[in-house]
Every structure is written in C-alpha cells, then in structure tokens.
Length: 239
Ligand SMILES: *Cc1c(COP(=O)(O)O)cnc(C)c1O
Image (cartoon, rainbow, N blue to C red; front, side, top):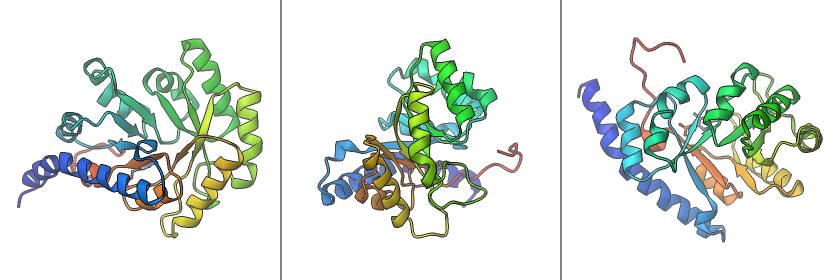
C-alpha cells in the first residue's frame, strides 16, 4: 500500500472513529454513574492534514484542541467563518508573546502554568473584552522537563489567578508521565478539583480516555484515536 493510500484510508475512518469514541465515552460515563453529556470530546487536530479535519467537521465534530498558536490560526481562522459553532481549546504551552493571538483565536485555555502567563492572559482578555475560561496545568508527575504547577503549589496558584488577576479558572488539566500507570495521576487531579470546587477536569488522551472518565474527566483530549497517526511528510518544518 502506498503512503497516499494510507492517508486517504485514515481520512475515510475519521467518522467511524468519532462514532466509536463517542460510544466508548457514553459507556465509560454510564459505568461510572455519570451523564455521558458531562464529557466533552476534544479532537486534537495538531499536525493533521486538511482532509482529516474536513472529515471530522463533516461528521459533526466541533470541539478541537491545538497546542501551537500559529499552527492553530492557519488551520482554524478561516474555518471559524464557515463553522460559527466551533470551539477551540489551547492545550499546549503558551509563551507570553503569543498571548494576544491566543486570546483572539481560542475559546478555552488549558495551560495556565505560571504567574507571568496568568497576568498576561488577564491583561489581554481585558483589552480584547474576551473573558475565556481557563484551566491550570498541573505537573502531577513532578517531572523536571514538564510544564505545569507542582501539586503542592496548586491551591495557592489557583487562588492567585482568581484574586490577583481575576482570571476565570474553571478547572485543572494534566498530562501524566508517559511511562506511568495514569490512574494515580487522574485520581490526584480529581481530588484537587474537588477540593478547589472546580467544575472542569481535562485529562485522558487516546490511550486512556476511558480510564480518565472513570476518574471524573469532563474533557478528554483525543488525537490519534480520532484522526489517525500524526505522520508528517518528510519535507515538513519541524513542529
Ligand atoms: C497531542 C496531545 C493530545 C492528544 O494525544 P493522542 O495520544 O494523540 O490522543 C492530548 N493532550 C495534549 C496536551 C497533547 O499535546
């Protein structure tokens, strides 16, 4: 099979993938005694080719996640006109020099992870009169190379975001360490959101979204299981 055939094969499967993932979400939610509608499926569209994006839109998917501001702008700015009900979530690290574009494009920011960014977001939201719901990213595995607030600092940081910057903090987000069993990380994040009385819990990706829902995830971020693998052409710019 040629590479081109593989690509169109993945595109033809996007609608089926979405239907299967939605059914899995409903099953996991019901097993946990939760309303399936309490879980939002975020289709993580980073790096994916246009035909797969169009296939997802044709299948009715409207909520998408991106982790780079410029890439997201290229992919979604024009489509926003065609699909006014799109909901775009920023799920990747945000540099303060991209805050202006991020506030203009996205509807939700999942990755508030330091005071300087919290302040920059608050100032920019005020300037643009766009008060976006935000989540604080938590480094549940306390990994040195990873973004996010350490679990022991979360209460103070959430309080500062609300009180010092008047950010609308609605929840917490985490990416567990790749080699760890995710359950303890999901449990820890769920405990923290409960303690802080925050309604949103962004956790669970392609490999573990069903587990995350058992632990209370309200937003699962699913990329490869929905769109297929993120194979990049050889001449692609480094991401
Ligand atoms: C890429 C990404 C995902 C999706 O990962 P998959 O394993 O492809 O589902 C989810 N969350 C974040 C923060 C990501 O960067």
